Amino acid sequence: EMFNVHASGGSKMMGMVKGKIDELFPIEASPAVRPLAIAITVLTSLGQKGIEEIGYNCTINELVMRLATLTKSAGLNGVVASPLEAKMLRAEFGPDFLIVTPGIRFAEESKGGQIRVTTPKEAIANGADMIVMGTSLINGGFSAVQRAYQEIAEGLEERQKKFE
Image (tube, rainbow, N blue to C red; front, top):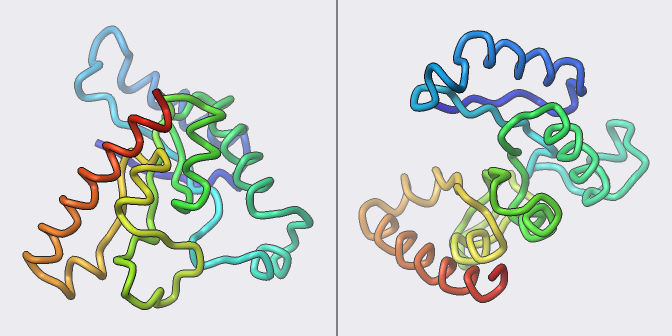
């Protein structure tokens, strides 16, 4: 139903992906089965020093925005980005641009290998459509799932105030 590519592959590659989706799943013939295509911007395990190490000479926000703009221009459905960039992306691209955010942890948890993280509530309140929250839920079991649902509900309430 959804897959991702790396936005750093560039607009030509993302345009080819969009073209193949259009070919295999024409909107008029199969809107219900058409997969969503999203592009990964900057991994949540990278901070400012990390993106500089691999050769980018800009801020994380600038890089995420540049890659998201390429993604939107290529016609893909949205991006994978840290929850710290969700608010900026939502403001720039509006409600129809899908934002998937990994790096979701409860406030008291360690970040593990992630650098740019927030809670489920913060991610949703800032504009994320979907969150990726594996470690916390696996380690916390059913009570962690219940807590995540509660935080998501609280985040949705805050989000309505911010974006409406």
